[in-house]
Image 1 (cartoon, rainbow, N blue to C red):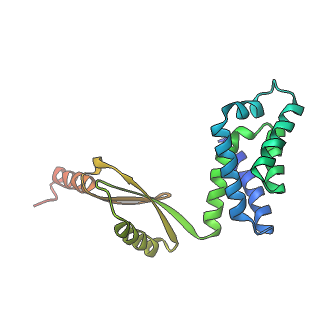
Image 2: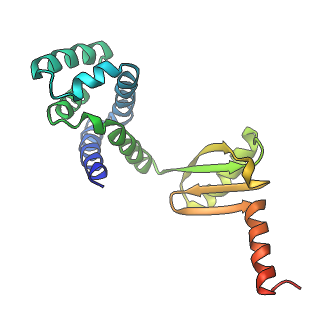
Image 3: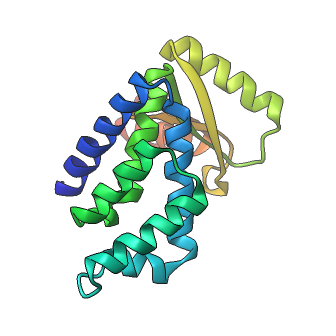
Length: 183
């Protein structure tokens, strides 16, 4: 819970600065790039997180990496603040929430769509169009193959769920039989 509060607070602060400077997408890309560096270089991440390393070493190493990534001054200062406040370990959550703010700002919702078989691009576009009508926002579909559904499609946008899977239909039919409603 505390991690979410931290992530929301820091990402919202950076997002507000990005909106003022009209650099919303740029800052998101820079956060993604720095996250990739941390994943690719676990020793660097350890250096930034570990309290046993002197602050001067952390700051110098961070400055060199930030310069090589050509981070904007605001993102560089933001990441430096996370290091100083010992909150760099929250960067993945901060980045994720920052991207949610970008989506919200752009009136975009992300739908997780699962199907028992691989869907082609045109089928996914039709599903996205149907969901856009229902939700009233632009939909970005993240497709996942799920053979356990048996057939049909399952879509989730936040808390909103549309379950058109054969598995769900069979379970509904089974419940109807138990209640004696079929016949």
